[in-house]
Amino acid sequence: MASIPAKAAERIRDGLKRFQPILAAAKARDVNESDTVVLVTDLLQDVFGYDKYTEITSEHMIRSTFCDLAVSIEGTLAFLIEVKAIGLELKDQHVKQAVDYAANQGVDWVGLTNGVVWRIYKVGFGKPITHDVVVEFDLASLSHRNADSVDLLGLLAKEGWKKARITEYHSHKEALNRFTLGALLVSESVIDVIRRELRRVTPGLKVEADQIEAALRSEVVKREVLEGDKAVSAQRQVSRAANRMLRKRHLEAGGDATDEQPEGVSPAGRVA
Image (cartoon, rainbow, N blue to C red):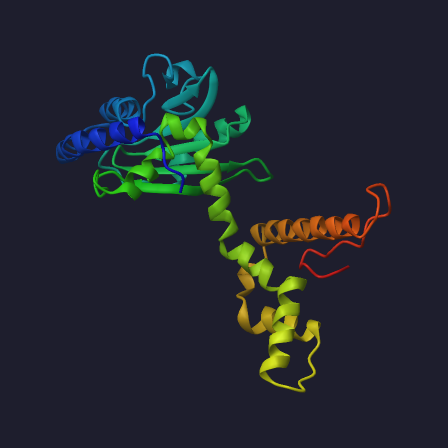
């Protein structure tokens, strides 16, 4: 995870240390949602670095009750935040209204918080609209002395947001998710490696690539990892990467960019 500037890191450490007892006291008093919004606004300014007078707006300035707070950077809406009372347990359904509004406005990110627990969602603009948790943290359990905790909060900080750190974090997380790994396991290049290794482990073994793929799909990789919208999206990503590699090899072999391109690969990653 990329580090944020030293000045921002110092602000986050000092703010976290100062606000943890404030949050604990507010939770003990079970303050209502309106008071929690005030507390979250202070956190956005004093910990995350946004100006509450010019960069944070309330629900009355963004079309009635679609969400509680909106954060803008240099005049562009960056993310929306749905705030719940500090004593309320967060549920995924709490953020649906803000997600719908974000999708209508073309905003990629939505936050859900009760002041202590924070979840940051990436909005998907397909049909149906999706929202996946990318970052989640509990301010009460983080340590201001821990560099990883500071870097984690830096993803939401103004300095990190302007550098698209959360987008980088999301891309890294997506690359390591079960759907991408599943798609890679049944891709042509990985199956070819497995085939070679099987021949090395068992000399004289005759096994075809389609047999290995069938075994992976039925015996090794869980069905839900290879089926569904997220699985199909991951398989397409792997296929696109394989196609790019084929085109690169085609050009390196002396082909022209306008020539007929090499055959592509199927969603499973095998040559079509």
